Image (cartoon, rainbow, N blue to C red; front, side):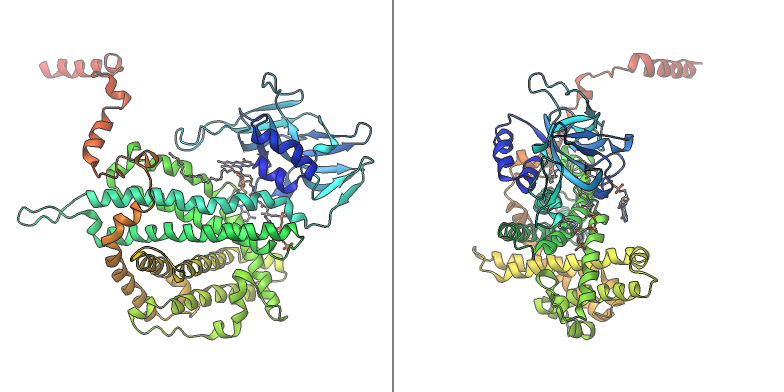
Length: 560
Ligand SMILES: CCCCC/C=C\C/C=C\C/C=C\C/C=C\C/C=C\CC/C=C/C(=O)SCCNC(=O)CCNC(=O)[C@H](O)C(C)(C)COP(=O)(O)OP(=O)(O)OC[C@H]1O[C@@H](n2cnc3c(N)ncnc32)[C@H](O)[C@@H]1OP(=O)(O)O
Ligand SMILES: Cc1cc2nc3c(=O)[nH]c(=O)nc-3n(C[C@H](O)[C@H](O)[C@H](O)COP(=O)(O)OP(=O)(O)OC[C@H]3O[C@@H](n4cnc5c(N)ncnc54)[C@H](O)[C@@H]3O)c2cc1C
């Protein structure tokens, strides 16, 4: 995040100076934005950067305990420098949050520079899983940096202390977060596909019940309940991969437009990265835990690979923007778009469907049979109608409040659901678009088509209440979708293992005795148990101190 911050907010001169140092690890940087008292509310940060025209320097200061920087990854032990976000004060005026490059530690002996207090914030969730990351705390006591270490692409402070705003939107200050959020979506698919690969392979090996005439028991993967819990997660792993690829394209496109001062897609990039980051990370965190349960008792062992994956993954719901806060950003943009519909302004990009408001508010889903749900046009329209109607309902309810802000506050739980509906529509749409493309490999397209339908119909089934409450579907059509879903699971089953093998993960990368490619699960579990440090001694360390006195007492009593 140190590098993208300098790339996005530094001048060419600043990039030339700092980036080569960072690339060659001659300096190590971190992204110091969040404070003890404020993370989500970036405008509420308290650290100050006051310009001193006498010396041509900024004075970086932490005025309160709550202004201590808190969480930056790499800050605790490794970083020599940070991009620090602070309130810029010049000529007695507060100009809000800006980025500054600040050296924290000596390049000679790594000791903190004068006026800098720093350290690690302590152990984190999941007994050590994420503790290889040194998340840090940082305080400044009037630390001076040269004026040219303010990141000056978006605004400048002159030698005399005049504040000058460039003709670029100030939201570009948040550009680093947009960049990382888009990368987190692709990473969600990686984490989810790891968990799903473990659960599918193990479910093909694990057998319980169902033996007839002394024959083999049933592979748990053949149980309908196992399929209905697992195959939607498999489909989600593919869905997030495709939407992640698309988001990466969108981000590249926006970046190219920014270079020629075209800011027209900035809002779209913000809404899509924020919303997709929120929906995909929440779904992935829940899915990893579901995969643990799908692997029964053995899933709870560290050697299954799932506990560590979960512990490392869950903070993704919080870092780079708390998921609820991000979805409320999407909701704000949805409400803005709905309010502009009457003025004739045509929504664009992923909001374009809202332009069909007249049709979608009244349309009736034409599905009559379960097979009808295999028609992507029906799926697409059902998701569009649900998302639009939820957004319009929210807008109408907000409109009845005494003022907009109050209405938004009161309706925020509904707004959250409207934002999720909009984002799920994007995921479904991008999956449908993907399977319409030429896909090489015999039968591959058909498999992806199945997964696309599973993702869409499972999402529909899970959120059926939304579809019914908005009148986008009838209860009968909801039931038909569920019927079709069951048929799709049966079609996915024969290829389930191949569909996870296709992720092409090595055993080393998976790190799971349950997810081994060769399926040799039981010998591996048995062998792994003997690696437990508790098994280094046959008689445990505490035996003489704690167990023996108890046992001897029992022995004495029994002899009486
Ligand atoms: C063996 C086990 C190994 C397992 C490994 C397995 C798998 C891998 C697992 C995990 C790894 C996964 C991924 C790894 C990749 C990367 C992650 C790594 C580390 C994470 C490091 C984390 C870093 C951080 O967290 S940095 C800090 C992040 N902080 C935030 O996100 C703060 C959130 N808050 C905000 O963004 C803002 O405060 C706000 C909420 C948007 C509010 O802004 P504000 O200005 O106060 O007000 P508004 O009125 O709402 O907005 C004003 C205006 O601006 C528009 N806007 C807002 N944001 C943006 C934006 N980003 N871009 C463009 N425009 C924006 C907004 O719409 C509004 O516009 P308007 O005026 O037109 O209405
Ligand atoms: C592992 C990890 C790594 C991190 N790395 C970095 C880093 O490198 N650099 C950095 O600067 N930061 C980093 N962070 C900090 C991270 O970005 C913040 O923790 C995150 O943005 C959430 O902010 P918060 O902690 O202030 O949560 P809060 O905003 O305090 O959230 C608490 C609760 O309040 C709710 N809430 C908050 N505001 C609203 C609202 N307006 N409406 C409704 N509900 C609301 C949230 O939904 C949540 O339930 C990291 C955090 C973690 C966990």
